[in-house]
Image (cartoon, rainbow, N blue to C red; front, side, top):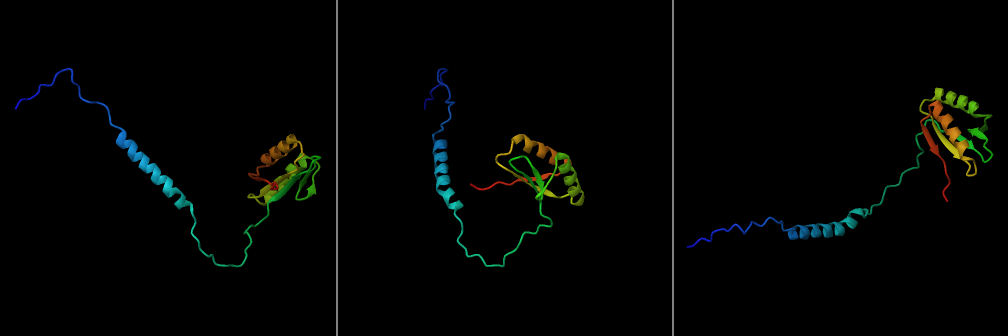
Length: 136
């Protein structure tokens, strides 16, 4: 038996064969594409009927309104200015520290007026503010 001497011109193959890797990845992608729609389908069940319940809300949130002319109302009572709003909100916050506020702003009100009112609300310390809109 004769051994072929390894010449210096022949080098070891240092490239990685990525063809099997690509094949495996393609199979995994196909499996994912086939099974994904099956995971999003819901189960058909008949839910039991119960009596209607109301939300467990201890106190309703404050209703702060700004009409197109810039008149501010709190719980449908008009307020003279931002100082009166701040005083009323601080009184409400003293009664209930967890009070929330729903802001109803007319679509034609000037943005700067809404920004001033929001800054006043933030200054009083009320953290729960929600904007009320109408679905189109």
